[in-house]
Image 1 (cartoon, rainbow, N blue to C red):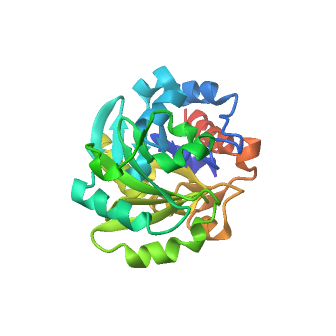
Image 2: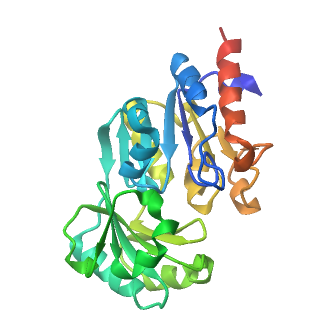
Length: 273
């Protein structure tokens, strides 16, 4: 199995349910693996629904050497330089906020590259989405002036699956509607996904999909899992998500299953010397 990983130049992992355990913690040995991958000339990447500033808060100074596909593929950076940026017009996000607010207990938010804007009614749930780090609560989201990468709907009862079909049917226009975990539905410009963001990154780096490894667990990972033959679904992923991947880890996110993949890539590089 290791022979097929000799050509890898970039690894990209999802965050929630993949790199992070259910308590939101990174694997303790991650820094060491990042060093080893870098020593082998392999770029360490993240492909996440989280915005840039939230990932910056997690990885701090290491951002300067990383590739980041953020906000569900709408913003891509490499070594702190912007590679790709897809935004929603003000008229667009005002209309989307209006549609989201029609449902009770569903809270809209605007995700920009520098902060997240939440409706004031979200304040009681702050602890549930504090990983967004930079949050501004506003009285009227329609008056926000920002480069918005995505509009997201927050479901305090973790029941987004009950609304997904309705949202996909009601939200017309040039948009993609995608679930993220159990508590979010993300809305981006049409065609945006982690897979699309990775394609933009591969173009920038002049890499082929065969030189990429991806790891994910959720429905918003399926496009990137389909992008490369070196695709891994986590053990804790649903069977549907696993059907998009060519491999499945033997351990879950709570048992640092993602490290298995880094080990395989490093082993292949060492064997090829």
